[in-house]
Length: 435
Image (cartoon, rainbow, N blue to C red):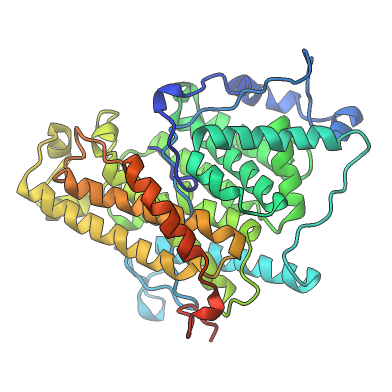
């Protein structure tokens, strides 16, 4: 299942790059090839043998239909829309998926608040690098930008409006997410095992400790050292990859919601500290994170509805089994791929839910820093239009792939830019105002 990573990508899936920095090999030998000696640590990463003026670094490929952010936007209390609801007086000990995710949101917001108190703002820390490493680090960030420009053109243009520090940080996060998604959704996915994911997570932990394994890791290691970015959302995304290895059915929306958080909503939690919250915003930090989460969930649900046929051909059904049954449908109907009245009615309800998440996400975009709002608005408007295209295709997600045509993208971008000019102070009262 293609993960909704950031805003939008426009590259052709057939152009995927399969030689991922010898990625699989590096995962296999991770335990014996960490940056153990002082020379490697001082350089941040191994460049290997350089030929000519510039080393050509290859990145992992990922299906480029990308999206960003996701979740709830209701500041202090999370409304329940999933199938498992906690009862009163502690009658149910197990938390619902939304409650579990909301606890993560609270933790991330608390980390940012702590950083704000210690620093006074979210400006990045100054570069502190060892002699001789600054040019190498700059090259690492440049390569992340090249990957972003190649696979997510619209998003890349939006990042150019950000400050240089924020722009480079978002590029680094983007590349890590692509590489992680590639593990289970790329051309080498059949070779990936739970052990490989464990090694990838160990590599992540090293990265957060300032011991990056390669060039791309070095850019992210520098990013997490400058911004109040926590490791938990990164680990949660890897957990989503583990789910894809062992799970191909979701019994209800509660299960599906958790999956959507793991593979897409996590990106919002990674990125909000980098994008920043507008100084004039009256919204609570928790509510901004919830709105960020909502867009990721919305984008991933949109991916699922768009890719029903593609996923079915891989033996996967990312649709709530109980809701299929209530609509009089089963997996056999999905594999048969016929558009019926039952299917149309089922899809209408699924699209309605996705739009609800988009509506909640809209409430928080304006609260972001001014230089970060345009690409997020572009993501929201363009990805939301995919739902319109599914409807225009008579809900045929079996043999038709809904996509937003170039002309509509061109029209949407200036609209997104106009929306990005609206500041939180102009909204009275703010829908996410602190209480």
